[in-house]
Image 1 (cartoon, helix red, strand yellow):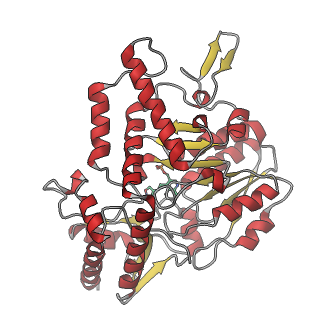
Image 2 (cartoon, rainbow, N blue to C red):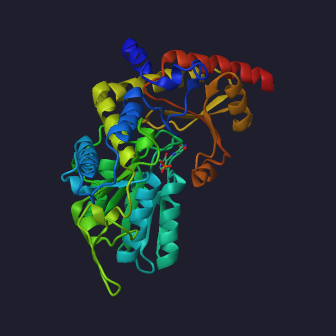
Length: 405
Ligand code: 7TS
């Protein structure tokens, strides 16, 4: 298996150039690197196929449209959505969540309605709901977590009331690595007739996602955390919800007929895709899905878990390390503190030793408040990481400790 992944690393040009050849990249939860096949697909698209979509009679535009729509089908198959028109291209997870928070609020939210979120959400799955709540008079209710960083399921169930209108929850915490029991959460919410949005920013590359099996109402993710380019992401929504919700942005492509008196809207998925979309990004995302399928999703999951296990054991060897997030079910994200040292100091020194980690609150300040810490150092894994990377991290952390004492 290790050899298999060594070979895969060779497909990532960033590690082949002289500048970053020796970089230990442990920041894939923020953004993953892209393999040749993704970069080449985007480059080929612009070299051979680019034109605007959905509007040309000419052959080049038809070819671009075909490639864009086949990318949609690729995503549909990847997450096993029932229909291709349930796949909306967006700029990323953040835009996908904003789209739902905004349109859901317009259609359904009333004063005193309740939105359930968890204590471990990324700001992207808090602020859009807070804005929706402020506009409508609805309220946020927060599902608490235990010391290990797991949701308190009993509290979750008890938070439901007559006024609960939607649950929005992360699949995997970008700080704690916790894999939430989303299937169970969704089943319970549905018993109360409440729809569920899953923030899949971290889930998409660490889990086998089958939206029909999960039965989630919405699943949101970004291309750039699954080896695709930035600026492309997905909102999956069940057809019945997407049909019922009003449009988000107005503009070209999302209309059926416009007059100054009245506009009627296009069918799904175009109703939610105003303006010229990120066609090159969709091409890159499609290539990234091929890449993931070629690696084998199960292999990627296994690889991440092996690295997580190894990193957890090795980090524990360092005196003064405190791992933040000890859930029973975790993905390849590991946050920690090194004695009393400031995460930014630790990260800066690691950077000087060619190790890229993320430090700070990771856009999860309410979680930091809950944990009563200011931030963490976070190492997160991708397909190109190896046990040697973790060994280098551990050696570097020992040096950092000496330097800071
Ligand atoms: N939700 C979660 C759980 C995330 O981890 C992130 C990004 C987002 C939403 C937003 O995704 P975007 O692609 O729209 O920006 N997380 C991180 C991170 O952990 N470090 O940098 C970005």
